[in-house]
Length: 153
Image (cartoon, rainbow, N blue to C red):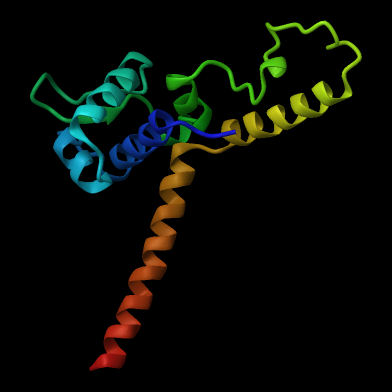
C-alpha cells in the first residue's frame, strides 16, 4: 500500500494552514515556500481541499486560507477521503466489490481486518494531533540547537 502524493501534499497543506492560521489566512505562496511544493500542483490540492469543505478563503479572493472547522475536528481520514474514496488496501476489501470466493476466503478476512486497523488509525488521529507533535519535536530540536550553540561559545 502506498499513499499517493495528493494525500501527502494535502496533509502538508492542511498542516501548514493549521500551524500558521491567523485572521488573514495562510497564503498559497507561503505554503509553497514552507512545504517545498510546486505552486501548480498545490493549485489542484487547494481546489480539492476547498471542494471537500476542509478549508475556505479567509475573506475573499486575495486572502489566504483558513480551516473550515477546528483542527481538533479534522481527522486524517477526512484528508485521505478528499483525494481517494474509501480506503481499500486490496480490491476485495472494498465492501461494494464481491468476489466469487469472498464468503469462504480467510485471506479476505485478514485483509479486511488490516484495512479496518488502518482506517481506525486515520480516524483516531486529528490534524491538531499532528500540529501538537510537530511543536513538541520542534521544541526539542530548538533546545538541542541552543545547547549545541552554547558548547561552541
